[in-house]
Image 1 (cartoon, rainbow, N blue to C red):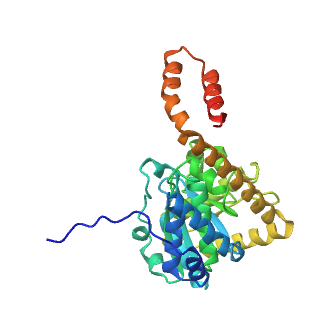
Image 2: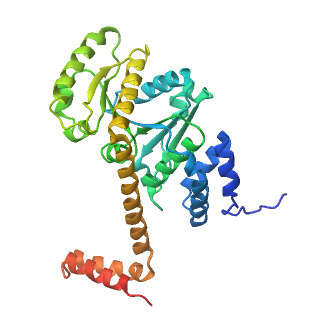
Image 3: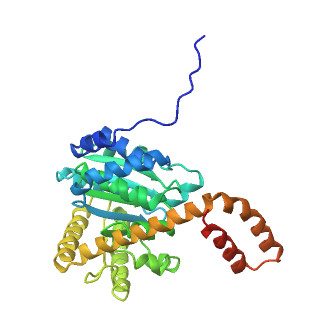
Length: 337
């Protein structure tokens, strides 16, 4: 019988060599680089930052598009049709999926490559689910850094799909240039259950499945949405959010959506809004990372770990006010040896 040899968890990574390969468009190295970024290892975190600093000058050239949708709107089918269309235009497309709720299990959820088989086989496409993990910046850092690596590898369009609901829309809006909401026909009934806030995040509303007997209803829904959108605060300064119809199944209306995005890019770049948004997103990224690091530092402090259960019990029993309890915890945390 052979001996069982325990593998060590830590593997040495040549961050600079990995960065060079990514800049040359090596897809295997890109996948390895993303895995390095997603790792919760402290050692891997620092190696990932070295790699990112190396590739950073070659990032920022792609158009970043966020895609969300109501349940049943056909996001996967749309992304496959849209991504395939872009690839046929000679563009390289990366598809990333964001699901903050995956931190419950600690892993990525989605079988994107199973759901988008045709796009996954396209040599100009790259599909990657993105787990949040909940450490060292979570979904904010990992998805943003994955986007940068994809841009460094030469991808022209980054599609970021939201998988969760509520929280994920806001997270993705804060990391993309253009944000679209996929809906179905029957706007009147649907809008009753749709949060106005989600509508105000969108730069375009896409009525999907506009084919067959549903085509007439889809055009009517488009008109209803355009009337509603006219009265809502636009998501992007100087841009009027529009509703369009498409059929992911028949692949109709896809080129019109792309033309709208190109018009958006030209308009916002000319006005300076495009660059202003990216600058603001970088600033917000810094702030979110500071909050994440402080939170991790606080809860990993040995004194806090020891004191917190006692404080929690006192608050639960009603013998200590919440504000006073938190104040004591911070007083302990700020005491330096």
